[in-house]
Amino acid sequence: MDASLKTSVVDTKQWYEQYYGAKGAARNNILRDAGALFQLVAHDVALIRALRSVSANQDSAVVLDVGCGDGGNIFLLLRLGFKPTNLFGIDIQEDRIAKAKSKNPLIAFQCADAARQDFPDNTFDLVMESALFIHLTDEILAKQIAEEMVRVTKLGGSLLIADWRYPKPGNPNYNAVSRRRIMHLFGVGTRTEAYKTFRGPLVPPAGRFLSKYFSWLYFLVHALFPFLAGHTVTVLKKVAS
Image (tube, rainbow, N blue to C red; front, side, top):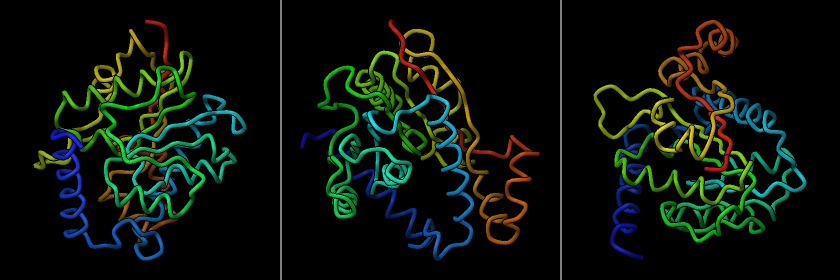
């Protein structure tokens, strides 16, 4: 493992340790934390709508999840009927990849550097990420990862950018994945074109509160106040340069 990747691994591990240390180990456990339930439902709904918009073929589509963690999005694809042998996931944290592999050894989970991927050009029909770029404050590294995601996507294939569009006030460890930033990172207008955007979970303070105490109001607020959707899934298409 080279020095730059080792640094990224340490930084990422420290971020998760600090996050769950402050929020509690059950922070995103929908069985233990009622505030997480409808946030996850809203995330999955947006992702499913995005997949439907690109007419993803469950039988033949070859899919890569960049920064896959312990495989949450991959397992959603399995529930939707995608073939496990066509699903790939990479992450730099060995413990999370080990956990993902233990859940389903048929899927090609790899501990790998997203900025220097081993896959050939034009390998995947669909490349996706979830809450990866919000944590990338190094814009050079973010650009490298985005360019790799585009490189390994087939011409005419799709990229799904599922991330948070607002920064966290007063916290420099978050970098908002705004429309402008997506255009810059993924070469929208040159290497890719913007297709559609779908609204995901509400901003965490509002979303978690509603999910826990007024779950029946969650999607009504989601519909009436679109600016409160802090998370979006942006669909890009890879085009000829």
